[in-house]
Image 1 (cartoon, one colour):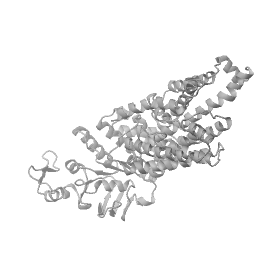
Image 2 (image 1 turned 180 degrees about the vertical axis):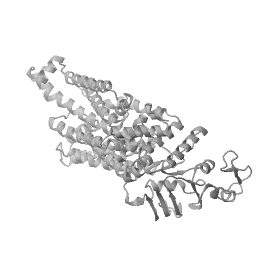
Image 3 (image 1 turned 90 degrees about the vertical axis):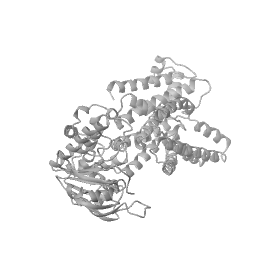
Image 4 (image 1 turned 60 degrees about the vertical axis):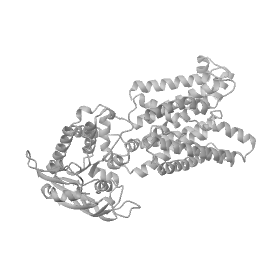
Length: 262
Length: 324
């Protein structure tokens, strides 16, 4: 669904590319995760999906069409992106906020139609934010706000959804509920592409993981392929062990205490 | 916004307009005003109402509506509740354009706004470039600082132009720089109202796009808005609105700052609602301020820009304090 093909990304005025020769496909019905340390190029990939930076080599395609050939409206109908941060300056009703997800489907000047409001309603139900519909966006807690933003992305009704660090600042319950929701979406046939720092949760939920290091994918595969102690220790430059979660059997990373090997 | 709030806004505007028609160097009773408006009043009362005060009130409504809408659109576009055409230097740039045109003997009420528009666009580009060089236009304080710098430059440019024109022109230009509805004529009202209506209609058309721009660049891109061209478009429309008001009434500051905040506090949540409510509230504020300017020290007239600044500056300081 979302496909990176030998993509190289470089910021204007920088010598070294932020991402070099990256290939990955986020398939329909799968939860695909991109992990890696700070500065490894994860967010740059999201910026490329938003059209803020164009690949100087390789192509990004969405459902078979190159991103370069699609307008932002076309893209928004196919793929929703929940960006890392969003701080509302002027509060609005949650209902209206979620309905903004329908923007790319309607005409430019027409407001949301009755159908759009229905979609907003069902997206809210799916994301579990129905009770907040008549609240103002500035009254939501961090976890509520994140789920409301996911509801707006669902209202776009694309076949793909991309999330950049959606659970930063969330407590365990809210974080788990976001991951459960993403799991559900993947089961419904949507291609879910998740950028995350939460290695252990990613290892439990993702079908496929790409581990990024200094702009390069050093491993792509199933959680057990990627969650290897030697590999992660090298990439994160910190001593760690990978064991197995006694409760669920998923690979579990445990950083060790001690001085950095640097 | 609830219907009650809208009714309140319109009612206050009607009261302000009636008061502005009734009061002045000669005060008229309400019945005399109504008679004169209906065309069955005493001749001198009709003269005062229909020739002197009515066009002035009409111009005040158009100017206030333009400033209010411009401020509301700029605030959403820049995600910044301190954005306002006067503080951003947009009005200053428009004044340079208008003064230049006037000094070249272009005085048609249809053309001066276009010259002002050109000046406003240059000022917007300059402000954005200065803000970008600092920390980006999203930072409220950086943006206001850039606006002040560009505004000061515009003032200097105007003074240089004025140093080279006859005394009579200087005096009228000076009065204009302080803001005044004193030159109101029906021709001026028609042009100003026409341009303001055009700008307002365009803002309504792009209302949803502005709503999404106000969420920030990344979310807007994700929702399908081409942020670069959309931002440019909204800057052009808000500059047009501000420029038209400057061409008609000179520099009237702070209306665009105060009015959207009032609209939001009355419950306006959508961008379209905020812009419309800002138009009505802006009209009321300018008509009322002009009334104060005329009667406070009658028969002398205070500059309109000074009256709006007296309201706006404390408001600005409160805002700034709440932000930091």
